Image 1 (cartoon, rainbow, N blue to C red):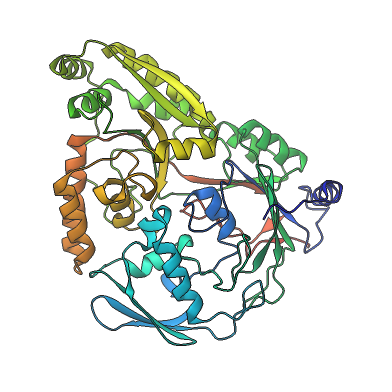
Image 2 (image 1 turned 180 degrees about the vertical axis):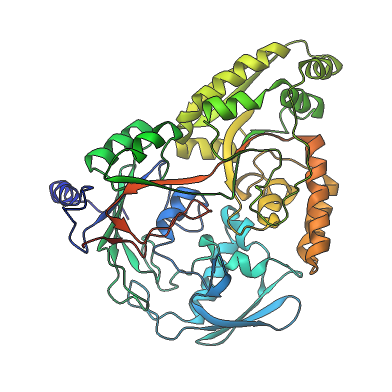
Length: 499
């Protein structure tokens, strides 16, 4: 996978495609350089489910079904219908080829489902599939079923992690049917995708997508202004005014589907006590963190899923700081002083101020908070293994359904890599989340999810931070880019404005 790039040629290419003013247009097919704010641990679709990996792979792999603002749309499947309460039949496109030249057939879909089922990293997306029901009817017809009725099933098939892989791929390279094929990678530096000329759909106008890993926000801003990159996927609110004031740059924004939070490892000797989790929540004044450190990006979070997600509970009362209540809870535990560690990944360096504020506020109830920063891949592994006390991370409910925003994060079947990073276990929540998946009536499902949210308001495995908006900073000479609520943006329709 890690082919060597000729650095001089690549630098020349980048130099030719810098952000320009309206009287200096780019060649129509010039490369598009995009800055990723965190490293990509792997390009194996089933070994990781992070925003940065999906950001690259959504251009390489395609899904059976796609999802847009209007709802579900055909992808590699032209049509589908439900055979019974657990089984669907899909009719596939016949004019599709993988990047290795192999034709796309139902056998590739069956292979993908089987491979995905073997990975805990994407169980939150495809774990409900019952492989005994997967039946290839012919080259372009396949049936797929779930263990039990599963209301949001089709939306899960539209998730990037449900992208179809080639069963004939004998390499470690990602091989898909998408409009861009994997070209090369320099670890922790860049990934290059090149236009796939045999793509079955409308070919991209852009010849290459070059994803550069740049974890420092200040470096991304400088690179954007000087032409080293054309898109910053994570501009800081501190730089919004500067971006808007620059003639060759623009800022695109939309509401998001993400919740940022401080997770608490509920298997920790101290954090297993709900009273300590409650005390931490009462001790922290989140308003200055939101306004002064996060610069009011998005909304201060009061619930575990964002308001833009179906199933959100709008009647949850905001939790205010109450130091007296926090101290009473700490005294009730019998612990006069505690020492805990907050772990950050290198992609979260911009929230160092948040960590320092938490340390100061928790000291008010005699909690000594240490802060450690780990490289992003190490951070993920550490959190997934449960080797943390407190950790800062976020979760994007890509399907815009409460199931994806709650089941993965709080069901006891989903510990670790599957999404439940707090290792939280609550029998009633398990019962409700299981029942909501089987329930066909939206109104009843909604009642169940709201009860889950109400329980979480007392159990508090998280300290909620915010539901951030999604922002993109980019060259004004780029067109065809619409920010996605998921935070993984589609550059397949991007083009350079040449007139």
